[in-house]
Length: 106
Length: 106
Image 1 (cartoon, each protein chain N blue to C red):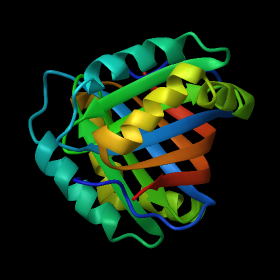
Image 2: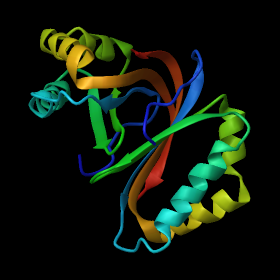
Image 3: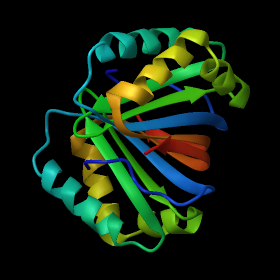
Image 4: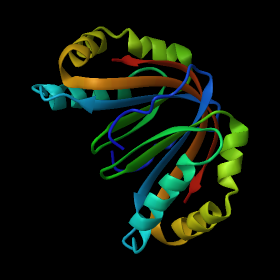
């Protein structure tokens, strides 16, 4: 991800996923790339931003809660989350937010 | 920032600041560190998460919109934002969000 997402006028939704990786990251990068590509093709997907240092932060933007729920229940995503919870993530938080205002430049 | 923020039960607010740096980053790290320390001491501050690769993402969490507005108007922060807009940031987006749900482990 090389630039901030180009999102429409609020309101829309953001999913903030914050995580710290464990030592067992076998398969993580491939699955992460695959999930990013898959999410981007979902109905109601608006954009994504991601960066990792000590902590990883991925923010995905969605038209509404239905779009988030659709992605949440996607079979391949469900399986990736199961592996993530049991192996890749030492800790994680997921926050579902309603974006109310947006500013920026240029 | 080495772990996800420990925030209270929703609802509360998140400010998602996404940016790409310009080539002129003189003074940026010092100011960024200072702003992080200063924000942490503001009334209603709940936590912060930050990572930068190609894009930088800083998510700060706040009790309510009053807390966000208080920080937004802090004199030293106002000056830092002015320099950021004119020098450090090639592009940025700031999104103000109401956090409605939160999950995580452990």
